[in-house]
Image (cartoon, rainbow, N blue to C red):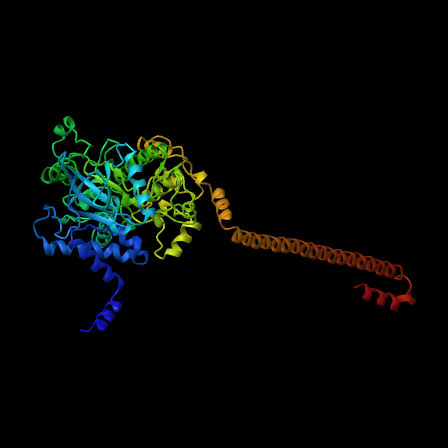
Length: 575
């Protein structure tokens, strides 16, 4: 086959098919590309990507590694880097526009770490070097239990890198993919299962990866197990997953949140299976789960309120981390599900400070530059006006998506998406998922208000309201009244509002003139009828008078014989 015919064949192939080939090729090379990378790059194909790629990944694993799900993939032979200072590279975890992330071992301490490296093609760009260094400094200066810590920064063999904590967890974007798959299963089963519960089936663990993430996505931590854990009951506001193996042992020896010295794959696998998969001691069985938004007539199961509370706990942890970050003068600017990692203990880790900006730091962007992921970007961020409330807005959109299992703004075309974000408010949560508690809907609604001064003014306020919701206490946020909604709509659409007001005024004027005319016409008709009735009464009175006169004259002429003919004529006229 000639090169021309091969080129024509490639051009004639479906774009999603080409993207799928690239996705599988990267996976076979040892990378862990995430769906969010592809949906962000190709929003016009986002829906097809979300539906197709997980299925392809399942088929690929079934074909290439049957019965060996727990084995960690070894590093590709063509790995370009072997060592970086004190770090021995094991394998590539993922890559994105601003860096490549490797699993590595810190030789001097013998501990696993994740190392992020600036790609070689960006090394000559001073702007990218400064931005990469700024990311490392921003993350290294933050010490919080929900922020991925940085251990060291360096340069080796011409490569810029920094090392951070090895996180065995999944990005919330991967968890969302699994929840949507479960939702589709529920919808498909609704016709044959009246209660709308997810059908029981053997789940083959799916390894979903992260692109440009600060942490390792463990191949034994299945998205299905993490998704199911969100429906499991827990009283601990700092954790999501309730251990279900030996409760007494775990109460006396709670799992540590510090995963710096990560356990072996087999040991961590046991922990994960005990916390996320085993349902023998009160865990949530898949057959007893009502997925939010699945099916129109599905009853609300006892596990669904637990899901709302799980998402609220995620929000508390992220808001606490953002409040700390903001108090240190650092704005993240790219909060989204892909940058929030959920580990096996239920802790949420904020990662990827690649777009972070210090409040008093000189900005590296040019006027008009737009940084961040468009779908989770605040309206003011598009014009470069960013402060802490922009992170609150992005977190609000993330919580919306976790609750509704769909983005708040779901346009695929970039230009239409920009207009949607700039001109529209997210839909009311309860119109998408009626079961969401009103207080939780109100909290999210306040976080995603378009006007920054109407949002929570700090991440701490958001975290406090979420804690009030979890404690069944009155929240501080208040629902927007209809008059306030109308006023906001008028301010966002002044031309349309003015036109609408003119039309309404014209309608009122026409209605008023018509009403006045009707009243005047009705009064004239009533007056005419009264005049006619009066004339008829006067005529009857006059006729009676004349008749009486005729009769009287006739009586007076009765005794005069010569007037008999005249008298008869008068009587005839009177009658």
